[in-house]
Image (cartoon, rainbow, N blue to C red; front, side):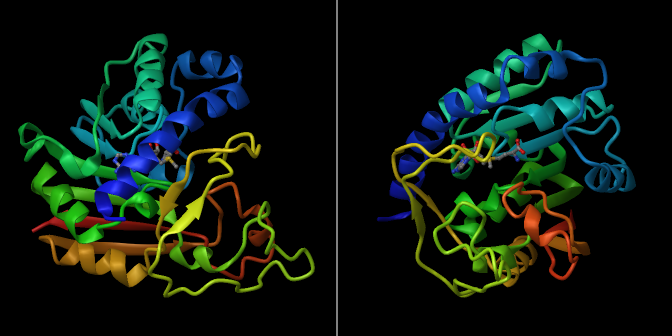
Length: 268
Ligand SMILES: C[S@@+](CC[C@H](N)C(=O)[O-])C[C@H]1O[C@@H](n2cnc3c(N)ncnc32)[C@H](O)[C@@H]1O
């Protein structure tokens, strides 16, 4: 399979996941998202957004899913927000949430590798969060696009799961060992794709027979190299012991491992 095959397969799998997530969230989510000041963003990333002065700034979020974080940014006082996602269904939901929340984000169904040139140089901040990078088979190509999206001196803010987590089975996996939850079962240097056909329900944690979805272990060095080799300077890299994935909560207790990170970059 080549990069395009992986991405086409993932579009199908993420389209299937949208309805499953929507059911798991329930209609009460609609009340949440329309509440004034709604934000899905935690204090850690909100603090970093304030540090880089996000208020009034034009922000783009690749892999925005149902737009909850884009709507949050707008509620918190950002300038215009654009979200891109490969999933037709997630973008349809994002448009619905946008209306319900009375927000004015722009949502575009697109592979992030194919973002149109009309968006280049338009943004002050590229915002990438939880569970986005792992779906992208070609990080250097992706960060070239990220760099193109930014205005000169624009910022990149990544808030992601720590890559080390890809070595440890999460709760729902057969390799998970309750007696030794820190068991390293997979190589940090895995280069072939992960494939799953039992669903992508990180909301309700249900299992269902799904189209195959392909993801990748992106090492910290892969991320850093792809950033710095595409005209972006790293201003900060912070590692945290809290879980943002919701699939590794059991690793938080002892605060032994890095579970998430924030990278702040700036366009040279
Ligand atoms: C785990 S979700 C992101 C969740 C989001 N950070 C949040 O917390 O709401 C990953 C998203 O990446 C999207 N995605 C995967 N590959 C993509 C691609 N090549 N281009 C655009 N979006 C992609 C999926 O459709 C999915 O919506």
